[in-house]
Amino acid sequence: MRIAMWSGPRNLSTAMMYAFAARGDFAVWDEPFYAPYLRATGIDHPMRDEILGSHECDPAAVAARCAGPIPGKKPNFYMKHMAFHMLEGFPMGWAEGATHVHLIRHPARVVASYAAKRERPTLADIGFEAQAEIFARCPGPVIDSADIRQDPEVALAALCAEIGLPFDRAMLSWPPGGHPEDGIWAAHWYGAVHRSTGFAGAEGPLPELDGAYADLARAAMPFYEAMSARALTFMWP
Image 1 (tube, rainbow, N blue to C red):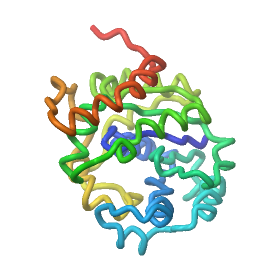
Image 2 (image 1 turned 30 degrees about the horizontal axis):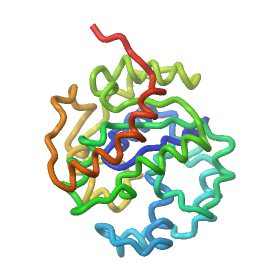
Image 3 (image 1 turned 90 degrees about the horizontal axis):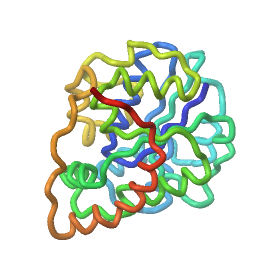
């Protein structure tokens, strides 16, 4: 099985990659198209030069690896993708044989978390519109990060059942300190998850935003709400 897990940034996406890596039957790949996206757009991101110098920048070469032999001769391949990295003209043929899953998170939480790492984010930076476009092209189960944090075992077992994958309780924990497949950008973005050994507990109240950040969260809400309406549902105690 090849899983393409689509999300925006600050969506629990790295923790999900660690969960699948912890199974032992999955190879993982961290944001394959990040370097091609940076090169094509010229956008200024933290560690831009290091990313371009350390990762494959040719989208065709990345796409070939997405469809090629699974690393480590593992039976399964988990690819953590940012939807907004898939620019017009980037190859998508590799996605035809993948199982697509869409990870979402409330915009207020995304904006608050993203703004702590990079100033003045835009709607394009947080990826909600791009994810809606990818979902239209590559439909699949939708899961909300809040549900995963509410009860990781219940949520991940349900997701695995939805995609025809046996659940493995090894997904619930991982060693601290990161993963060998982390992109070089982990030094800037992954501090909290590197200190973790499993999913954090249930989230508290939504953060209070004002000014431009509140406007940004409001602009993202229609895309989030459309995806949320399709998300897996759970009956919590």
